[in-house]
Image 1: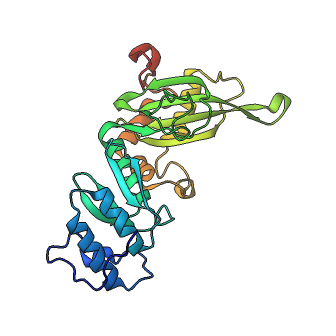
Image 2: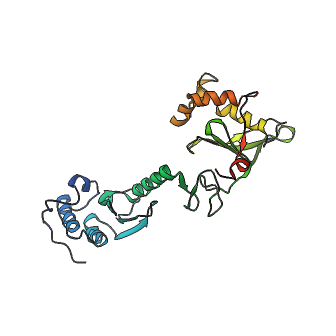
Image 3: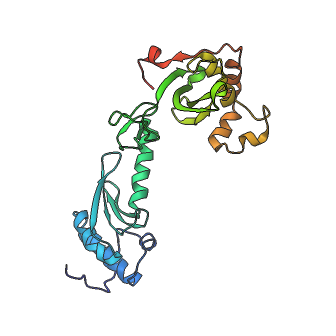
Length: 274
């Protein structure tokens, strides 16, 4: 490829701001690189793929690559050898801008998750509903692990959902052996509030019983003041906000040992929808 003339001034209406361009790690003279990149972009607005290809040498790139984003639009970017290193990017409707392709890809995923309530499977990257096995590989979409043998999947009052599964693990031996149950509590909007695999029902409590669920709720709905403050030290901001909320206070009452709260099995009530 023939070298572009150097020393040319950037067009008055450059398609890329100087301050934005200088986020790219450069080995060439920054002003010279900017002038040539801005000129190339201005001259080849109709061919962003061609323009980025010609710009690559000015930012120490290795050609142009393409990938499909979560909204099905295509991202073109100059490969600079690192997922999160700033480079020249192009997305239809947005034009040319500076970012890392990793940041653009993840931002598109987050936008789709917020808009549609879906997420990529951690194992095969297929999009699907949260709280259900991946429709492509059948694994747990959140963890990428094989979908665990389900115990219960229920709706709680106020729209919360609780799912439990057999982890295949236990603690203790013989008469002291206790199974370990996995659990996941989701808020009404679908976000996961709590997820773990360390709950153990009592020795005489069936793993898939309402009593086991009430015992689990006793931990999930603990509020500041119910136990030592250290219990909440590892809580995330979202978990802490929930623990301090009126929802948590009401759920703690409804699902106390003698509370009036009910467990509506999802499979029976909603045809298996999450």
